[in-house]
Length: 390
Image (cartoon, rainbow, N blue to C red; front, side):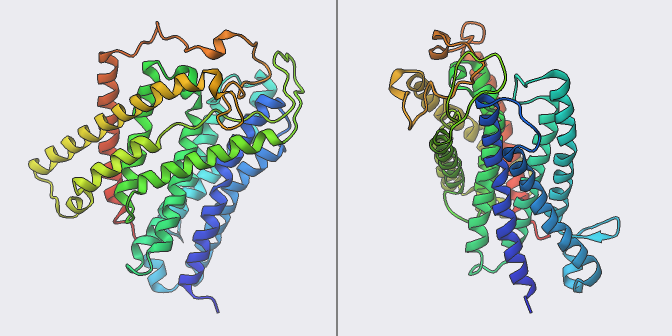
């Protein structure tokens, strides 16, 4: 008979591996749209995305059914109740996220039939889908955390590794959904640094604080970069042909995504700072005093400023490289990620709307403030995650 711990472990493995279908399917779906055009809902990429939500939700629904009717007393105590059913908190988050994903499917089909091809990634049905995907991935992350935090020190290595894997998938999801604002041609605008400062300090600080492993944020960011580069190199190996007019830029293969953001650079800097300031150790003993409150915000301000400074130094010059002929190759996919429905022109090698939205000291100060708040929220969430038991 399979023990409860072994069953939990296999659910952990399968749920995290299934969540990998979300970013992989999303990248594939975007490539499908810009290479072939709008297709039926039953396109392979759509099915892969839905699998990423349905499989973890099904695993957790079975767990809820078993815990509710046949669970041992200790299992029922460790599982929050919802309408009489009992399951871990992360399982409920995942199941509600999967429901949102399934709801978005007919909404997206109606949207396309009414308004045609999307011109933006974040359309209303895609926003519902994105929130559902984020909830699914976050729920699995919380489920892994509960298993990790209940494990002994000797048993923590494997769940901690799966936590970093789930965290890397979450970073990938956020990065892909941000593509509309992080295109290489937009990386000399202040909006780009504002978007980066809003999302990624929160994620990176949360990961670094919640994980018992060293260099956690760096590993999660490196996983994101590796996954994106794998898709950049894999997709062009498959043939594709546009099916919807107008066709301004004929393609004969799946179009790859843009080269990933260099998130690993600020992640490394944040990891180093967090380890130097002993943020994790301090979080266990710090109370609610004004001194602790001010120290938290001071650390968050330093983390936010460092994140923005490293991001600015890395992306500013790397974006210039990505728009140059030197990046027009299979490795970097520069000038190879354009949809079939855009007119070729020199604009593809230029930075967009720099005069309208310049990078100024005022705009950078605002981005730094956003990054500080984002880091502080990530710090608080990461500390809460270290106490998740159910």
